[in-house]
Length: 256
Image (cartoon, rainbow, N blue to C red; front, side, top):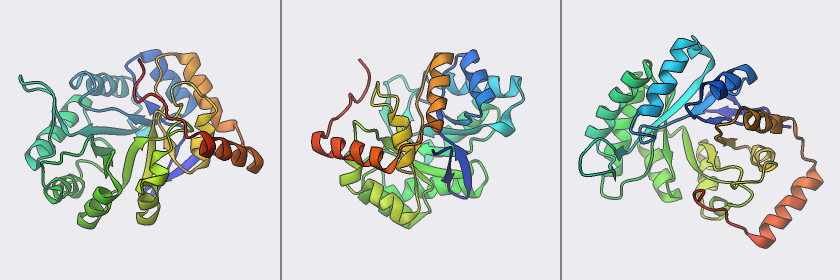
């Protein structure tokens, strides 16, 4: 069974938590020790960050929570949401994140890669946040293997977040996971249930990846957390792998 996994120079509990605003669920997450939390400015245009920050300060649990947030989408302009990775955007949005949370995030991602922005400029700006202690770790969401390698050549990338589950194993074959392992980059899996298969949490952890399932129900959080007590035998892992490789199923990118 897998209960802790390395993240950069620390260890974090698995599975993590794709943070929702429901206070009972957040309280239950704290009670269980499910404290690797994930949010982003694009979630309700900063409202989710504000709700999480208010909760953490209200219950005085900042020292218990490892919190990740993300920039990379312009969400406050009248022209609608768009991807941007400019240094100006990164430096502006971290300040907004800190203001809404009431503290500095532990981990800060580029939520999407902007093909129109010079990657070196973006990564240098992210690294500047780390050097100025506005975040401890910097990361990318959904990069290609080539983008990850190029980014890591500019500054150390601490994590990559991409979809991964028993229903979506594309990154095993497109070089992303291989690049993460080679470069010492933590892989954080979103949609680890494949939208419906609970045992997949244990399977994702068995691959050495941190998962961040989200929920709005306390009993579902209990179920997710119980997956850390599931110990897959070598035979079970081999059987699952055989089924996955034979069928190569793909889960829905987002729920309908």
